[in-house]
Length: 257
Image 1 (cartoon, rainbow, N blue to C red):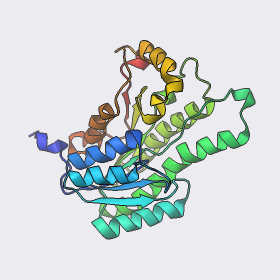
Image 2: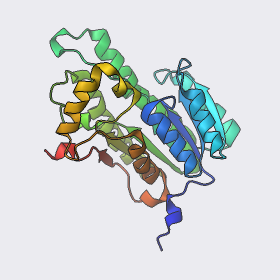
Image 3: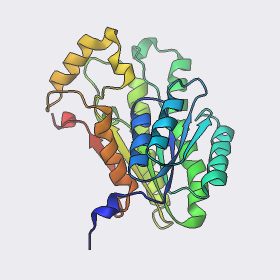
């Protein structure tokens, strides 16, 4: 029989990349509010990582501050090793680290294309790989990759062929890994946010563009970071136990038109 307790994460341990700001920070804190202990991973220069750890501890949960680069397999392996040493196991992982920028395709330097793919796609793959290596022996785990509605549609007025391609690849990577591990106890799903009011989108120079984004979204506004947390809790928890290979669009209806 269904129970609301299925949404709880008490007694579980989580790992979140990109936990120092924006959606990653919101999800890391949200996991703690749902009962999980959380290891927070981001670049050492991330100013918000300490704040994330502090907020998790205020929830009465254990928090672990880990630094490194998602494009570096050694950094990720070291972080997972530290997590398992401190927490003992890993049940939930959210891979949120990523970047975004814009350049006309015909003018884009190869280095810019490759950096986008290295962080947004290879970084997600390496994260999934490191996480699965400790989940597979226990035949238990939920991995959530943060993609984007830009992996499904092309945003009007934005010159982001590299970003869109990286997020489309994350969605298909998610489905591929879900099928590889479907009989091994690991669920792999993706969340594709629409336009969200992250620190990057709070800059004064994009204020007018945000008004256009809001007008183009059927619900007529930009999402808050908090509105991405509920979907993450759902996919992390027993409440979604029959969901794998899903790309959950959280976009205010944007892709409907």
